[in-house]
Length: 579
Image (tube, rainbow, N blue to C red):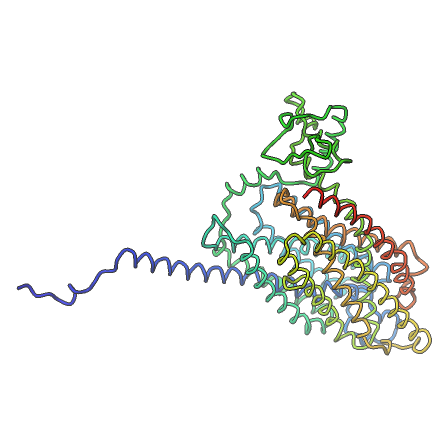
């Protein structure tokens, strides 16, 4: 009888168990890779939020130091290394930064889409470097290295422009890149759960945003020069972390991405002009009765209007003539001559034009928001304990915005429980933001009247700050966050709430929203200030900011809400009719 050894009794692992172990090991490795790459994304969000809270939110105090009113008295304020300009120039610098940021976002999206997309990582690298360099340049200006004032001004202008470039696309591009990487880690690439991906991204980014905001509190208390240097160094360190994590990132399938973008035909800044020009050239062409005469790149939607006439989406009686830009005339050279546009281009142009009335209702809203972004911080540095407590007011504003923007807010839950109420919810949010803008301006008006009354009658010669608590500004900061969260999120969801819109088109619409509110609003604020020279003098205490708030409350926001009422009725009926 043959003896059997222990080695012979050992059971070799089955192929199924080996495969299971390999899959388990691969899953663990994929999880670690996802966590490490997500950490690198979060570090960018952390540095972005730190710079926003410690520098950008209070940048007006960099240019308009209240100690400049003390003439030759020794400066004791923590902002002693600020660059001192009069009020109008200070507002122009800050509002120009906001306007350039909104404009550059549109340009960066166009650049990314024009080159076929898939360059998010390179763009993020450039934006982080630009942001860090811009902060460093402002730090150089605050150190007064050059004796000539015009050189300091030139350096500041360069720094503001570079910071605007860095700010413009950093947050949206990082969010998009994070979504792409998290989608690559999904177990089923053919059936990606977008809600789960967005929930993971929001979890990581929320943690980083809170951490950045909290770290900004002690950094805010130091003077401008080391503050700018610190935030610039943090931005540089996060850039290094993001770069070192490059091997962990999933590469996008360029062929699939390119084919998708060609099918979507990305919207560009010149599309509207081209479509309108082609439609004008064909204005005498009869409208086709069949879809065969339209230049189709894919299966686009056609509808019959109330008169049983053929019409391209989106339906708008006054814009039906624009459909002629997509009519094929039978000549091969017509496209090169600018006489032919695809149906998709026509549809996107019509959608843009249909949004113009809603965007026009946000111009005054943007003006109020721009005034809050500049004057509220300027009011604060004239009050007690501004060195310590002003940053808490901006945190209060952020909390107020997140209260109404969070997925657990009552209006968000309403749309989840009752999907048919989504359009009503968006209109309610816009209306709520507009109504709160009236209250916000009224409260700011009342507080400024009280501040000026204390300054004029009791403490006109007070050397450093007016003996008035900075917490008097808390209501207007809180209302500013509420109105921004309600109206801006409502506008964003209202704008992109259509299944016909391509992914690239939605990006452009969101960028246009920011440009209308923050960009044009900032330009209007500069225009209003420079056209009312009697109200705005060299310093805030010499100016009549209370009258500016009064005019915004009575003539601006109130009349704007009346205008929005008519616009909302027309738009709501149109949306409900064509749903």
